[in-house]
Amino acid sequence: MVEHLLDLGEDLIAEILTHLPTRSVLVARAVCNDFRRAATSAAFLPAHARRRPLEILLYDRTTASHVDDYAYLDALSVSVRHPGRPVRRPLARLPATKPQVELLGEQFCLQMTSCDGLLLLGTAVAGQYFVSNPTTRQWAELLRLRRQHIEHGGWSPDSLHTSAYQESGFYFHEPSGEYRLLCHVTIEDGLAPAYYVFSTGADEPRRLDNVKAGSIGDFFSPTGCDMITPAVLHGHLHWLRHPEAGSASEMAAFDTVDETFRRMPAPPVAIELLARLIVADGSLMASKFRKLVVDL
Image (cartoon, rainbow, N blue to C red):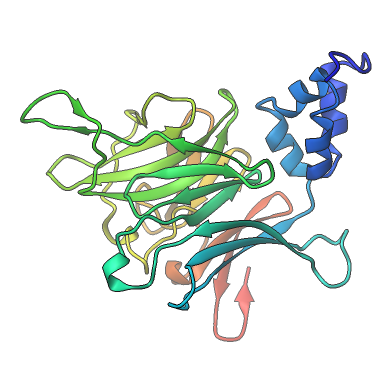
C-alpha cells in the first residue's frame, strides 16, 4: 500500500468515496493510506449510508426440524434508480435457536434493527448484543451490564439474568463517532428501572442519570410497543408509545446528541397500537391502518 496517491486532501477524498458503491469502497481502502484513513473514519459510514440507494432488510428463518436452524438476512432495493424487478442481495446467514423445547435456551443471533448499514444482533442471553458490518464481515460485542451484589458489595461480571431489557433505539452519536444502543432495564430485585447506553467505545454500559425511568408496564411485551424501531429525524428518535411519553396526547423524543428525553404533541390517532410513525420527505408522519385503507 502506498502512502500517498494524489494530493487531494482528506475532505475531497471522503467526498469522492461517498459516491462509490459499497464494494468499490472496500477496494479503494487498499489503494493508499489516505483512502483507507478516509474510508475508516467515524464520519464516513453515516455519510456513505445517506447516499446509498434505499433498501429494505428481509429476515427469513428456517424452521424445519431436520435441518440446521439459520436466519437469513437479505437486502431488497426499493430505489427508483433500480427500475424493474427488485434484486434480492444476500447479506448474512446467522445461527438461530433450535425449535426443540429442550434447546430453547441455546444461544442464537436475532436481528433487531440497523443503522447506517450496521446490524444490531441479540442473543438468548438477556443483555448480550453484537454490532455487525455485513459488508466488511466485522463485528463487535457491546459490553454487558454487570450486576452489583448489594449483600457482598462490589461488582460481579455476571449479567443481569433476572432483569427485563427493552431495547429502545440504535443510533449514531455524532460527538463521539460511536454507534450506541439505548436500553430500558428493569431489575427484578426491587431496584428502580433505569436507562443504560451500550457502546463499543465504553468500558461498561453507562446509566443515564438525567432521566428518571418510568415503568415499562405494557410496553415490554410481544403485543406492546416496538421501541427498538423509532422514527429517526434530525438527530432525534421518536415514539408514539413510550414510558417517557406521558399523557395520551403526547409522544416521546430522544436527542441523540445530548441523550435526553423530551415530550411533544402526538398526532391525533384514535388507537395508538394500530398507528406507526414514519419519516417521509424530511417530515414526521403517522400512519393509521384501517380495514381497507391507510391514513397518513
